[in-house]
Image (cartoon, rainbow, N blue to C red):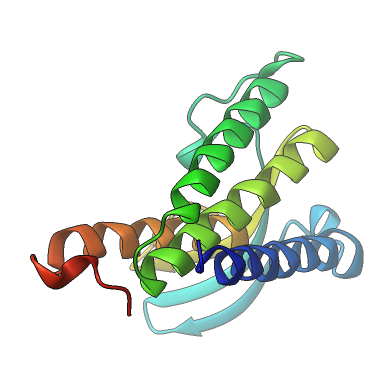
Length: 166
């Protein structure tokens, strides 16, 4: 329980960064009108800001045009965030605490988009040798990094004294 506050603060920080970046993309830069803005090109590697309205989940899976699709996905995300809050309550390490906070903050950021716009605002477009990774946002980055930390924690945490908090 002593890790709950740091996890919630990290979730709030990631959520704030996510929502601020999306606000700037939509209303400051006006990326929906510009569609794409090249930022960095280093040989075969690059980074662009590219506007994508993601109506599905990762890689656009489960996207649908039905009126209830975004509500169903938002509801599922809220349920998952609630389960992660329970896990956060019992987090054993600071790495686990921050990872869960990142996932929770990212999930809530994308829920806000679904409820507000009917789709998630994605805009970070990375590529190498002509191959583009999926277009993502700050919330997605937090979720992916959080999951990677949880997997690494599960795979590499020493046995025995592993349950002691750091």
